[in-house]
Picture 1 (cartoon, rainbow, N blue to C red):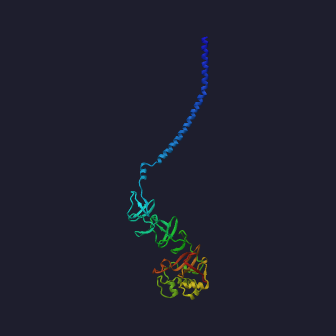
Picture 2: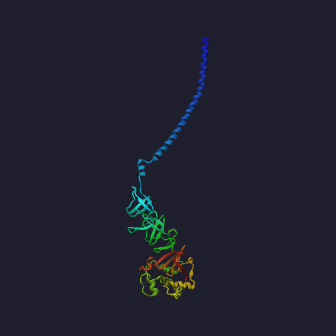
Picture 3: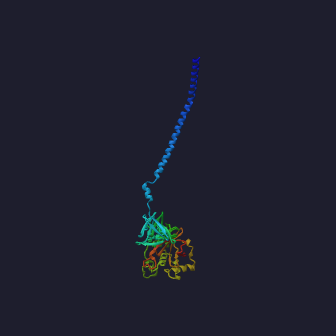
Length: 361
């Protein structure tokens, strides 16, 4: 009996052990699967950690080196204000007292002897002119100064001689003295130009002359540097080769004569000789010969100022009247002692320099 009981106990234990083993297999398989998933998660974590490590590396690289930090911390020169005046403070912290140019943050300044920076002035250094605004910055390029446009080089040197300058892709014409031509016509070497409200200059087309023989006669004279031919032809007297011998009216009369149309203007002689500008104006007043200047065409007579000058209309180009004039140009200034010339010029149609336009019949 005891032996049989022992056998049953053993069988029972074996059965229980088999059941335990059977139940353990899926659990182990599930555990192994979980272990694989855990491995995937671990790999993802590594990737994230690697990314964070990369960011940390970038941050570490952006941190200035000790040399860079030292350089950044080093004092630099600057412009400071004390009361009404500006001063240049050197990197050492001391105020510069010696006269001379300095540059801070790309701007140029001029330190006067004693330390104050030149402000709001036009000043001369070694025969060159400069302009400093109210903050002391020396002006460069094209800028406005007291209602007019001017040009200074990149070094701040003010241009005072006549000529073209180029800045920011545009062309500008600096007149003698320094002002830039604005909203006006002008001529350089007998080539007409127009300047808009911003001073940007463009070349104008030279008119054909509307077929006028008077214009053709005048065109052939452009560039002549003396009025001798026109004066002697009209006045039959000796010509003094200076602007003290006004010959603009004689030039107009000569061109009409050369074109075979002199009789058209001889009626004006009843008001004085044709070398005398008021004769043309009085003729136009008496016979109603003034026309709308916007309708001007080649061969018309154009009068300037208060009967101070006369010339011929070559034609109209856009908003400009192109002219040919005798005893004109920069050499014809009163008192210059130099001869005038036959020149081509340009004026805005609404120019205040123009008194009016006459069309003889």
